Length: 401
Image (tube, rainbow, N blue to C red; front, side, top):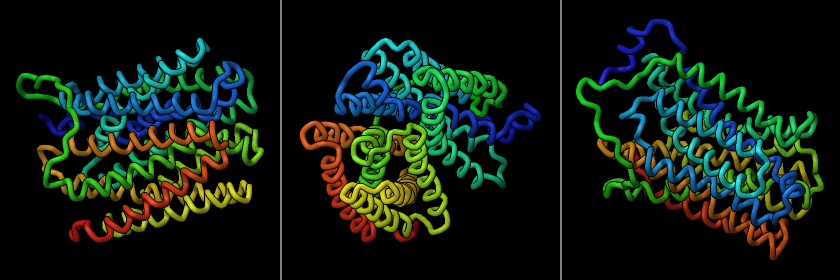
């Protein structure tokens, strides 16, 4: 395999890791674009809050499926083909939402978006790192993190603003995203390919889920921390609009999008902070900050306060970012080199299960208890889980992290 440095020398001046990070971000924007719009879809189509969470959960099913089947495809086929495939799936997802064909097409659109995100999660990160000069690998890792979480946060921010202040609220956000995807496709075609094979190309096989025995002691608590942190992200992405509208009386879609953006922006800040304090300290501290954020969110529901909810969202996002990046660092460091890719994919699978199952549970509880009480139950369960995980990882993480 030819190294990325050799590729850069051969291909001359072409877009580098920052351009690749931009492509990554554009793809991720589409995965959260519908978040502020679910209330409008409920009015137009007519379905329950549980259905909203199921529509969101099928996205996670798409992500997990893509990770399990195609997580390592870019190592064989090359980065550019997989990036182009992910962008094509993002465009098809946008077209499903543009068609306004009812609930079935919403499900299809979310599944396609999940497939796109699953392909982008590994391939986008690898492309950014491959294209970074040797002296800028740390900056490239930060760029990949910012592209991932920043893209997820920009989706609801853009769609919320357009839906509130521009015409065609259920169409214009997806038209804008299609334009961005077209630009991203053009940029991707200019990116240097960093994967080449000297001999015959290896066969393309599903990657599956692998956790080597020597990693399991580290993997379990780290994956549980990722599960809990992603459940917070899933909660805000799937049901924040209902929380804000029904519990706090906030119906401005731009505000809804901004609140969700704050969670993902805070997560990015938490990941940056982890780089300064190290994985061993950041994982338990991240769990502690996440617990604090969940408690503040619960208080906001009890006292019906929007500023307190926003404070809880930002605090929880910082904790999630710290714990997530620290857990990923610990798992990737402990994994054998030959199985590192599969082990990291398994870590992401657990994280994305955290986005789907708890959110569906909250949706079901909402039917019986209402949004406010369902949120309180979720916060209580998440606090217990994250606190237990934080205590465990404080005692059992390797000391050389």
